[in-house]
Length: 246
Figure 1 (cartoon, rainbow, N blue to C red):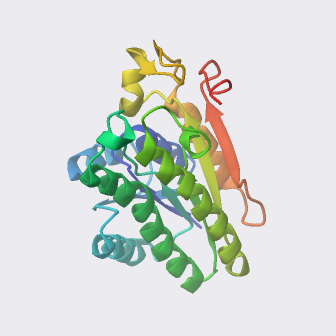
Figure 2: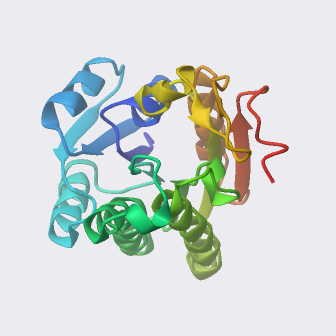
């Protein structure tokens, strides 16, 4: 039986790379993101069946519609990869606007919660019951960069969501894991090639790694039978200055 995966933030970067890896491994993929054109570009790169479903993951009505489309087309869901995320420009916490804070919380935390909620409902009701949810936690789920309060706060919260999902999903063969990624070479980390602020106040460039390595790690987590789980996995550019950051 072909397994079905849903990926948020599937129009670029990590989401696109994971979609390609899962498709190559035989999964059918539901692609979620804000921009239809970007999702369609991802779909063109896949070898298996896919469904393009543009949506704002912070909108509960839109999220419900996405899951309804997935159920109508595929009948079940075996994997949700909560990957959609955003940050703000690096700035002191006192300079952030309320709107900036709300935007990051809406995508990174509320979006992951809404998708998790709908996935759990679907996974509980389907036969056979169960499934897996993988959250993109980021290195920032463990320690901050300077001037990154909204992103860091939401990513720390994702760790709590992951743990709660593991616990609450246990009786229903639903499990969860979190992948914390350090400097995958995507559009989001392009600024690191020009230098980013360090904890000591200096501006330095940071090494990045091929995003394919992230996709391979997610595919490994996704491919395990439901009797086994990777709760937390970190994949990072070997020479990035994570250790020593605090």
